[in-house]
Structure formats: structure tokens, C-alpha cells
Length: 107
Length: 151
Image 1 (cartoon, one colour):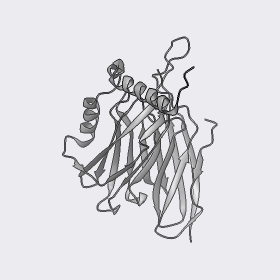
Image 2 (cartoon, chains in turn cyan, brown; image 1 turned 60 degrees about the vertical axis):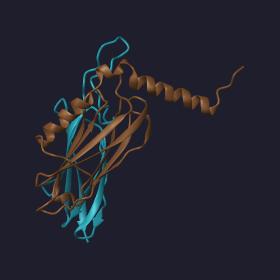
Image 3 (spheres, one colour; image 1 turned 45 degrees about the vertical axis):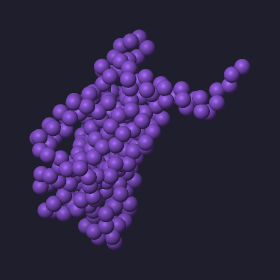
Image 4 (cartoon, rainbow over the protein chains, first blue to last red; image 1 turned 30 degrees about the vertical axis):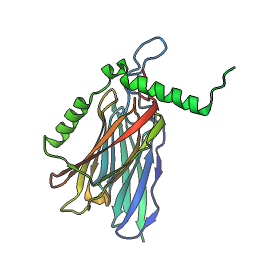
């Protein structure tokens, strides 16, 4: 998917600090319940999985259902003990995986 | 000519909501029994303790297409004892499941926030599971003016 995820991760943190992470990926999150003007059901297409890892270790993940609004926005926290990289992945119903990374420095 | 006052407009809106909830629409929506089944699948039938969860939702959602939801569980996040899973269920949507969040001690704080779709006025039920296998729950009702699940 060409869409670039939008992220809000602090660039720096103190050791042991709990930071807030905000993520948003543009996606229609089609429920599979809507119909187009001709009355045909628009097939379901949602992002069903989101994960966040820090230096390869899982921090937070979510299983999303069609009841999550379009352009899914997910906010959560993470405790940072060392400098490193957050890796975010979103998995689409059709198997497409969108990945992005963000660095953080412990000062 | 009769003008529609603010009070009348509000009354009309409330009436529409009433018709929606009482009306036939119920047939296609999830029932509280279905959402209970969803929760039972998550807990494995274990007892739920009420409390510890703060659910932040608007009391009235004008647009059910995107309703901000924020959850804070008042529980430590240590290696020995932390909130491992948070399940969100809606008892008046076409399907009860909304989202399931999986946390680790690296999250530092047992919180999650997102935006959800709500078809009609209904309860949002949150169940949190600790790493030790304890379950906490709470619920909040949201009044929805315009449903957000299509159809």
C-alpha cells in the first residue's frame, strides 16, 4: 500500500520513561456490510492486525474488527529502557503488510 | 408558518433514536447474548470482577462512524503481574467484536485508545485480563444519533 502511516513517537526519552505512541494508517476499513448504489455488497476489506515491537520484542498488538473506524487510529504507551527502534506493522485482509520504523534515543 | 425550535428539533432527534432502538432493526444486530458469548470465549467462562477499568467514551455520539474510545486499566504493569489482554465488545452492532488489545510489561501502562463504529445506542463492554488469569470488566452506554456501520 502506498499510504504512509502517520506516527507520533517522541525522539528522546529518559531511561524508564513511559511514552505515548499514536499511530494512524489511511484505510477504508470496509465492513462488508455496506452496499453500493446497485445494491451489491461491497466486499469486506479491513486491517485486521496491528503490532508494535521495540528492538524485536513485542510491546502492544491489536486484533481489529470491522467495528474499528476508517483510518484506524491506535494510541498506547511504551516503557523505554534503552535506545532503539519501534517497528509497527499493519496487516490487511488481503495479506498486504505495511511496516514502518521509528527510532528513539534514551538520554 | 410553524418554525422548528431548538427544543422541537431535539425532540424529533430523540424520537428517531427511540424508533431505532425499539424498531425492527434489532433483528440484524448483535444481541446482548451474542456479546456475552464473545466475552465467554475470551474469559473461558471465568468470573468477572467489576471495576478497575476507566472507559472514556462520549455520552452521545452524533456520528456513529467514528467514536473515540479510550481505556485505562488501573493495574500495575510488572513482569510478574500485568494486564495482558483487553477485549472490547459492543452489544448493539451487527457483530459484537470491536477490538482486542494485547499488552506486555513493555507497554508500561495498561491503556489503549482508538476510534470505533457504532450502529445504534448500545453498551460498550470492556474486559481486561491479567497475566495471572484474573478478569475485570466494566461497561458504558453510548447514545448514537446516526449509525456508522453502513446498510
